[in-house]
Length: 309
Ligand code: MN
Image 1: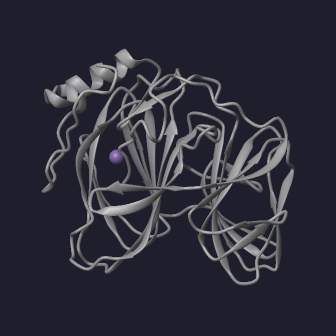
Image 2: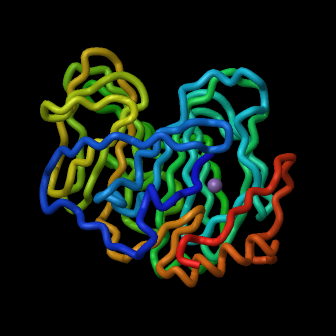
């Protein structure tokens, strides 16, 4: 339930994101974007923070009431060079892809698709839930795997960690001594935290850059107020971050080693050059075997040429 990216989200040129050289708290508002019939908050990419570690895209969707069952699906579309990470807090989605995967996604389960050289997928609304709340993220794949085979995995159970004043679920990577079973091609981490407050110390890695976004509630990070629709970029060089909350809050921690490669993102593609993206777009429009077929009841999504053609 995310994408496509436009040139309003990221300039159509390959760029290297520069991580902050130390701890900061930079609050940035998400941008309202249309994904199918739904309006989402696009938290990444930002300017100038295009990536946080290898995390290069984040759409916070909902919470919304789904008034007509089946209304919020997104039809078959392609990806290259990225992993999609789908995480729900409420509702259900059905993941279908060109590898033949068919997987219902429920809250607390990790849906992880690796595009590599190319994959296509659809996300259907099974029509049973009347609310939807979640996030879809993309992870840029490194040079070593970005042209490799596509893959899909689903994790129904993930490691849980108890902190003083919070519970955490490790989606990807390792956190406070617990390691997620999810595939990881770079050094990055994704953790959902339920903060009970009033003060929580979240352990971090000094060599990672990090960001926090809020799903529910309101938090204070070193005096800055975080709430839904904002991304709080925390920079590098932190062993921990202290967060305060008056009531319960649910947040997502993202982090990773600053991504060392220049990335070019357009539509549903993460690449390095315009030529790669032009070719992928042409092949998708021509129904080339590169992306395979998705057995979905929804219509295939296509796009015209990128702005540089
Ligand atoms: Mn997608």
